[in-house]
Image (cartoon, rainbow, N blue to C red; front, side):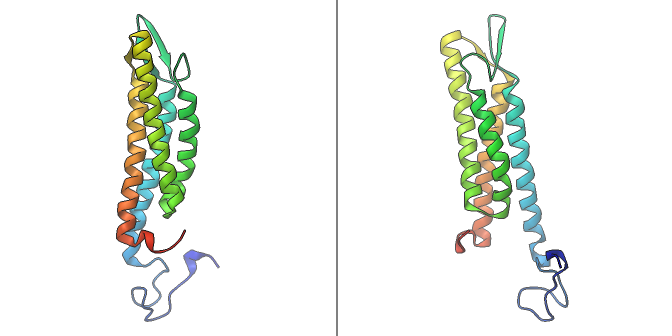
Length: 162
């Protein structure tokens, strides 16, 4: 027997009339919002990975991507991979997932901005599209974690240990 086939008994206090499913009709909007958060977080992590291999710095006809020169793109690759995995935990309501995605987003933003500042000081270079994409993806990850906390508060996020 799978979770999808479980049925609530008639008149159960948890939900609708006879034989409604375990998740309940009132939860469908919340479940779909969790699915959207998962999709957005994983898309942002993927865009951060793509941004690493795009131009981070342009200076005097030279272009550097996130893995070249003083850039720390490999750190973004590692942290984005973790964020991709933590996104599933975040969508299920795990505090570890929320903290993981939030921390990953902050590290990604900080790494890209720090690399841009270093390149600007050393090479007098301008930020490229890769830097902008990585920063935007990191900010989206932070936003998803904050949104999950807000949705979780409405659901009683802190009421049970996970």
